[in-house]
Image (tube, rainbow, N blue to C red; front, side, top):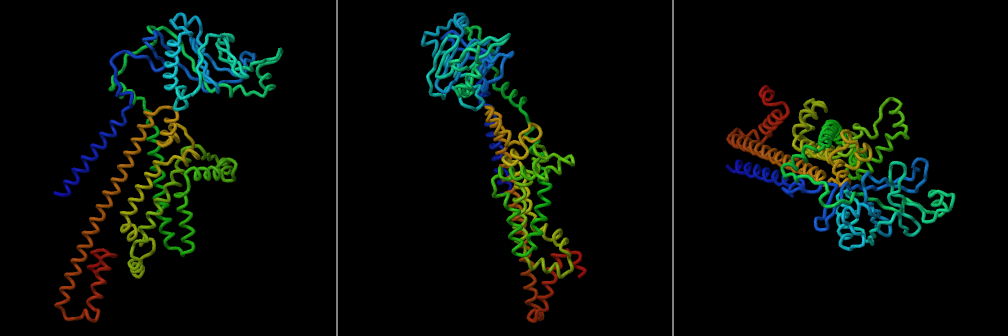
Length: 502
């Protein structure tokens, strides 16, 4: 009754935990359902001001290359149809609005209410397009709204909507360009780095409120369906495949290393133990860097492998090697502790019966130490699943090949996909919870069986002692005691059938 009650409690706890995780996995946007029409992801509208923005785009970097053989300075492309350009400079933020588009949208650049409304729309869209980086809303700089074709700030000139052929550009040039000189030559002569004069550029189309592109707001079920259907699940399969292969290698190497280390001399044992354990205390990035040094193209090992058609760096085998390196110490230390906890006299008794070391390892050490070995196996698998630094350093980040769940979490967050990163975080938490639960259940079950076995053995010993108390007193001379020890040892080492024949 008590055991069944405990099982029901565990099942209920698991169900509640799964429900909480399911709610946490729902994208935040999915819970904000709205049945009315809304602006698209790259659009925003201010109904009270009467205008809005379409086609918002953010450019983090420009280019210094000439356009059709003409040097126009450090340039950013202007998307087709864009009539608003935002330049974030080190000193201030400039907003250029084309006069014709402003008149058509009912925007007055000299009206503080209109400029404040436009700035609010720009901040809103800039934050959604920041990809986790710095946003205009956090910049403590003055804002300037202008309809002029260019403005000068410090030693730089910012040119808006500069037409070159069939394209338009936003260009950064030196404020003074000598006759017969190009912007690049003038910047070099003045010691200017034009790329440092602009942090990023935003572009959008200013339109009237009724021209803002809108779409029907999806329900939370639609958002949830779209989220999970659009999810890239390859990091999970890469992690699972990598961890499974790494575990197969780690399991064998860990057991053999623990067995061999246990039988060595004290000095050599300390050295081997330090070598096998050091990956557990080193930062994962250090392990990855060392692997990169060993197998890189500039090392003898790396060149030898490449000459024989084997490329390891930034491949899936590199991810497997990284997982093996970081998970091996857990398997090794757990197995070594289990083997050292065995009764040395029992192992010596098996040797006196003629058992080889291999047979002692297979038929005696492994069965008795199996509960601890199983726990170490699960921990090693979980460690391989959670590896980040070593894998990123040695195997890189290639979707569908080396991108594991931890790497996906980092790069999804860096890209601004917080909902996807949160989903993988919940997956890792759930997996870790199941690993710990399995270890606890398995350990408790093993302890329960051990307790029952020891209780049975104790009962058999008490029965034999009671029977010998009514015997002929041979136990005083050690005869009956010696017979009991032999029977117990034969039962342990040879099994019940062989014991009966003995």
